[in-house]
Amino acid sequence: MTLKAPDQPVVTRAQHAQAAAGNALSIRPRPATAPGFKRLVVSTMKNEGPYIVEWIAHYLNLGFDGFVLYSNDCSDGTNLILNRLDAIGVVKHFDNPLGPRMDPQRRAYSRANKLEIVRQADWVLIADADEFLNIHTGDGSLDALLEALPDNTDAVSLNWRLFGSAGAKHMDPAPVTQRFTRACNVEEPETGLVWGFKTLFRPASFDYFGVHRPRFHKTREVKPDEVTWVTASGTPIGDKYLRSGWRSNARVVSYEFGQVNHYAVKSREEFMLKKLRGTANSKDKGRIDLSYWDKFDLNTFEDTSIRSGDLQGRIDNLLSDTELRVLHEASLDVSLRRIDDQMQEEEQRAFVDGKMHMTKDAAE
Image 1: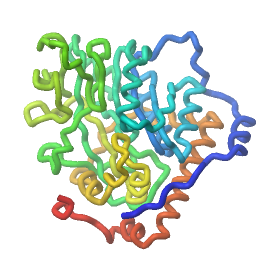
Image 2 (image 1 turned 90 degrees about the vertical axis):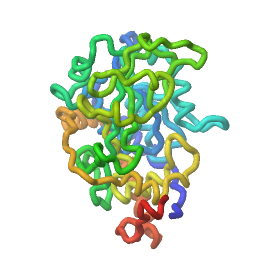
Image 3 (image 1 turned 180 degrees about the vertical axis):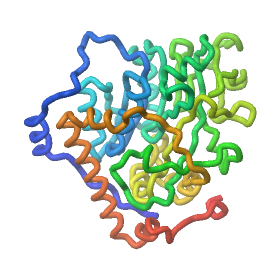
Image 4 (image 1 turned 120 degrees about the vertical axis):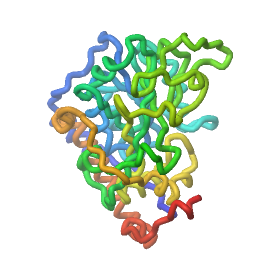
């Protein structure tokens, strides 16, 4: 598939003026003297505008109280949405332009590792914009998860569950977590990617962190009893993971206390947008192709277990900020216009209609 480059820019000065003129804040900015975030989500984004508000709302409802977010080379208003969320005290947003040495994701997390607001947090989770923590224990809150773990836990690794398109062709403004409820087989995984994990951890117990997990410096001697690192069942993950690894094996994989819902493809139209954007961990847009779709479009079982409290209420509260609402709607609009543009090509129409599909055998 060959896709056209996205157009520029997306939000007009008139829209900014309209938002500023009618804005009556119901979300008060965080005072400059307020204490740092204690339960923090760190992420980096590019062209994720239509999904940001739901993602923020979900993590706030779980019990996280802050976000350190990076963005790079956005053309759908993602950076403007994050700027507004920063202005009203919900997140800390940093520009993360492309550099010659590192991909955007590694560059962002390298910078985040140096921030005091991150190092001083009690708990940190690294999560992409398509990853939603799904807590199975208690009332589904972060508190419930922490209460279920051993008292001295320093890190808990929670396995992915990959969610497919569920046959959806078209983009829809409804919440992602409600639109997509078909997922992979976690007992007999269709791909080794299924058991990938993300880790909630205490930054004070580790030297630095990467995409999936915290780490120790290579020169540091780490004793097995130095940290308590557990699986989603609260059992030790094992010494082998102290140094490396981002996927569970059959011995340690667990979904007992929670999982990370990973919505990597969404609908067919949204996958076209993902291909335009590329991935956070690579500058190579060609990595997102039909073989990627086949690997992640897994719809074996129904899974409606995710709990986000009053998600729509939290979304409505965030969007009661007029400027944020204007930016959110503008980002959705530009995404739909880009889809319309892509659908002018026969190849794209064939993909959305389900007439173009690469089997797993062909992809391999």
